Length: 123
Image 1 (cartoon, rainbow, N blue to C red):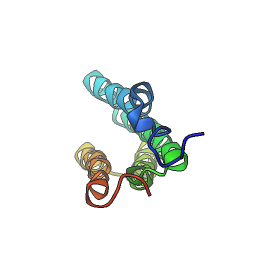
Image 2: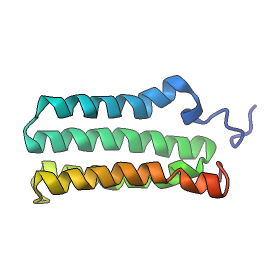
Image 3: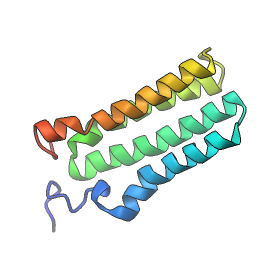
Image 4: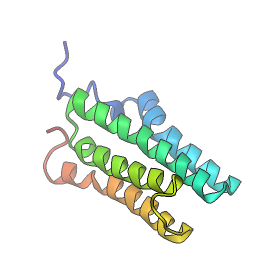
């Protein structure tokens, strides 16, 4: 049996899994942007896509203890909660602020790779 920290169980290193958990939701989000959906429907879709990516990160954190996933999972969850709040009318922001928060969520998720370069890949 493979050691959980040797990278073999890392979903990020498995192309099909990486595409399913992160590539596909990003592609759906980009494609949906071209559809010019009503604001709250777009926010609802964004919430689902962030939750989808958060799930992949949290599963990966449990499977292989990837440091990046311990950070990006909660970041995506917070982004999903914010987007869901907007979609449900609980959080009142305009499209520009919403776009800024979505962008910040994605940037923070990307920046969560930095600790792996500074310390190590697996916790």
